[in-house]
Length: 93
Image (cartoon, rainbow, N blue to C red; front, side, top):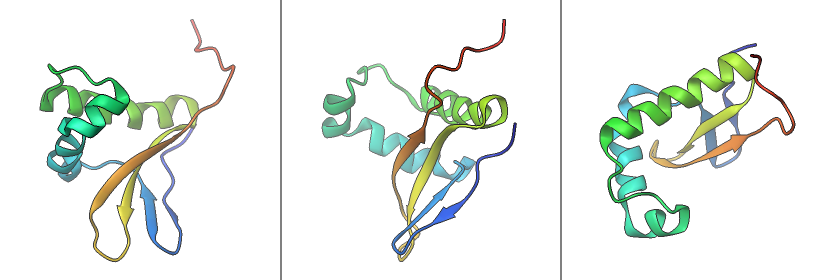
């Protein structure tokens, strides 16, 4: 299908996740506000974050949709993630 495209807005860069995002991504997921809002388990670990990031990259390859890392353009900081889903697509058997 394809790789995760990079898209730029005035303030953000939507891009594929990278290995060097792990520490910032895990810190974001590990915050009480995010855990509460997303229902993230207290057992969520850095290893789980790696698996999640890898799965998102794989979704782009397999389905042509997935998650972007949101990077603040001015600071270069990872500030979140956003996803694009193909509703109603059934994975091949």
